[in-house]
Image (cartoon, rainbow, N blue to C red; front, side):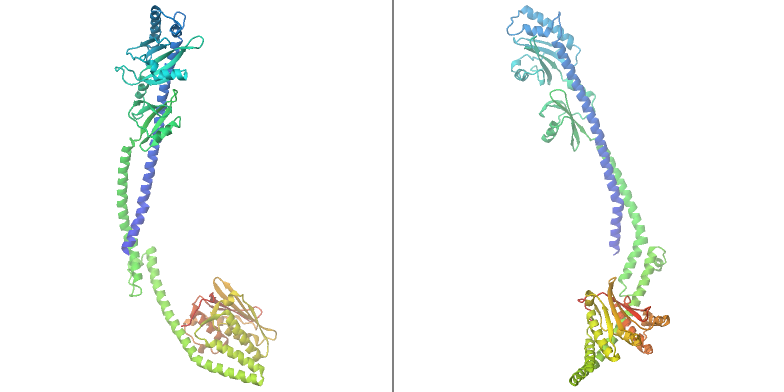
Length: 599
């Protein structure tokens, strides 16, 4: 018992103290991680947006440069358009003229791209097949087999105004990928006569790495989700992540270790994708775990100390009290006086437990006394049963003789009396239905009508369901007898007795009223006193009440009810204002199938 209660208390204390700490710590960690993740995501998004702006600005700068090249003038003419016109298929050009064109081309290109950070060379592809080129340092050999290149075929087939693409130079001294931006060159009639292309270095993308705080992983995707260029790192995206990026212009794709930030560029619908991580939170996580373990240790020590103190002041007295309760039937109880003298709830429990034991002993003694009285009542009933059988047989003989001689009054009286005796012989049953009691009352009243040569009207106000309730046998006959003997005999008017029954708070209330002389308060109080439970407990017998004939029947009913059902039930007597009495029986509400067999 002690171990069980202590264990339950310890588990309860753990739930109350440690579980809230764990829950609060979990919520704190979750909130902190969410905060850092959100801040990191915002910072990463800002950096990607900034990088996208830098790339877009670089492409815009290259685009403006290309426009400047196409519309640059030399000797009051558009140099690039003039060269393209001279190199058309239907025009013959001399070597001297081509040399002059080359000089003009180099002059214009060198002036325009000299200070540009990204453009490394310019190429002019003409209808004649002759290519003019200018590079800052390295030769890219863009002109080699250009008619079979993918970018040239795309420009020709799709008739594009502008094309931006990645390209790898056949020159092994040029490492990595380059960016090409190509535009057609048209004459005055709008006919395309040549294509001009600028070669941009990787600086266009590499320069953004110096200012970013993102993870060292970044790449360029085309509109279909294909990797075009890895700016840095070896980031790999799953098919699901690629689909999510492809379906949105800008946004974030979250993954357990961070996420991918992407932004759509102004060129070809390309997307700049970078990864951000939350690895910096690992150190914070380890620190918080250590704090949690320290808090749990402090809580555990506090709980142990608290449990020892509470066990000594609360649990131990309760365990001893429960042990004493288990020993109640077998041995005499011995409690520690120190606990009983306490003024808190523990002291109240010990004090009330002593009172309860005293009350239990009193009730046990009372139950023994009631059982002895009940056995005596049964013995008296069994002894009188022999006389009842003899009287019943004699009354049957009288009834037969009266019928033979034609004396109807004697026959009716002996018949009713015989039925009543037959009703009383069944001593094995202590209860009958209220309907059977009412039928017995009618037979008793017929005898009294012959005796007093006056009609007695029995007014029954009992509902049909209550007629099936079970009540003690002969519970109403003494009341009706008292009503006739002490109430109606002095009445000159109509003789009547009213019997009413109702259900009240799960009890059966039966009231018997009759007219008669007014009863004074002293007499009414004396009868009530004689019917009290205290008088009943004093063991006064019927011999002491022979002089109070009216109280004998009432006392008999009171004794029978309380012996059978307990102190909560019994009868009450009140005086009617018009004269006479009203006796109320308070009985348990028992259906017909609920049997109470007299043992």
